[in-house]
Amino acid sequence: MTKTINPEATLRDIAKLIDKIEDQKVKSDVAAATSIISGLALNKEIIQRVLRSEIMKESVIYQEILLEGLAEGKAQGKAQGLTQGEAKATNRIALNMLRSNISIDIISQVTGLTLKQIEKLQKTAAKRSQSTKAPRRKRTLKP
Image (cartoon, rainbow, N blue to C red; front, side):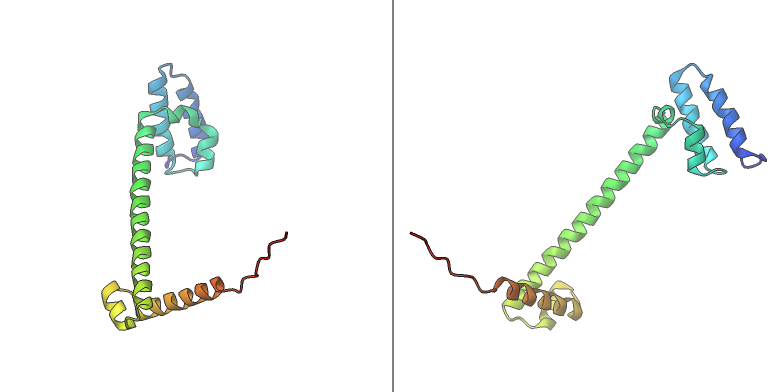
């Protein structure tokens, strides 16, 4: 593919040969392998246009790549969720310590947060408490 003058035309020729393969499993495996190799010379839009993706999706190779991608995505999502959960817990601990009038220096040492992060938390908490202390209207019961 990389040594041909017209890789798209070569891919079209290969696609015609793939269409002639009768064994569906072999057909899908060859289509998937061709798609992967074609990626060295062509962009994905051309490959998708020339090779039918539904054939490739049946391929063992395609399924394996898909499973690897899903596993990788799950691992990244889990790690990101853990990181976010730890950050929320740390912020909650810092806020509780602030409410207990513990010095910012000690909060920083205990939580690992920077002084700037703690000050930002402090400001955010102050804004939230002001917005929840908005005056309430008295309700009168009508007879």
